[in-house]
Image 1 (tube, rainbow, N blue to C red):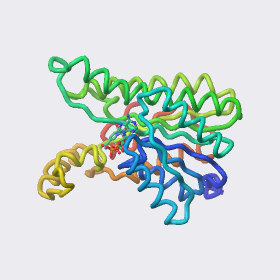
Image 2 (image 1 turned 90 degrees about the vertical axis):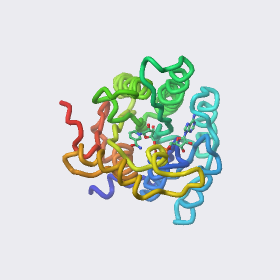
Image 3 (image 1 turned 120 degrees about the vertical axis):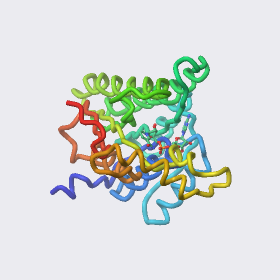
Length: 265
Ligand SMILES: NC(=O)c1ccc[n+]([C@@H]2O[C@H](COP(=O)([O-])OP(=O)(O)OC[C@H]3O[C@@H](n4cnc5c(N)ncnc54)[C@H](O)[C@@H]3O)[C@@H](O)[C@H]2O)c1
């Protein structure tokens, strides 16, 4: 029964940020569960690579270039998907960027850029998908928040504020489209080893410094009751659950795969 509830055969999913990390893993897992996946990213070659990997594994996927901070491009992504596949069942809004600066040092341009990608990009996706899903009377939207919403961390104002806005968007939209059969949830990951965090130990040629990796990840792991950092599938499995009928009674919720770092009510 549970297996059937997780089955996404015949469903159409769009995943943003699909070129790397959590987005790539989510695209792969949704495809493994049977969905036809549109892998969208500003890094088009990376999105194509993800789609190629999915197809090579026997799944169905295409790639699309999108800058999620541009409303017209996000609208076109959703319109093109519906034109090609006739419907949209899942939108995973995963594209995002990291930015570190204290409040005092933050330039207006930094704030604008991070809000544009990490919040407005999610808003544009939600709005476009909610229009289509409301009309078809079915759909699931999964937004990527962050553990940054559960605490205040020096240097993370732009990022944390954008993610807190994603939480508010998730809950508000859930109340608005729930009566039309559309669910909206968010995932707030703890510290996950991806391209975003990997820049601390990876040089320009992509070579990894294992000692540096251990030095950066170890303090993060120590903060978690489970004493480990996460990997992309720790998050993509949560995305897939929320996308599927296994979560058909779940909306407006923030799921926190974080090793136990934060346990809000
Ligand atoms: N890695 C972590 O520890 C962690 C923790 C909490 C939340 N998150 C969130 O998870 C999401 C994925 O992060 P990740 O760790 O996989 O990072 P990543 O850097 O590996 O992947 C981010 C992807 O987003 C794409 N992207 C960036 N700007 C874009 C834009 N304007 N339009 C379209 N695509 C764009 C990038 O090209 C990249 O492929 C982000 O929203 C991030 O904030 C990550």
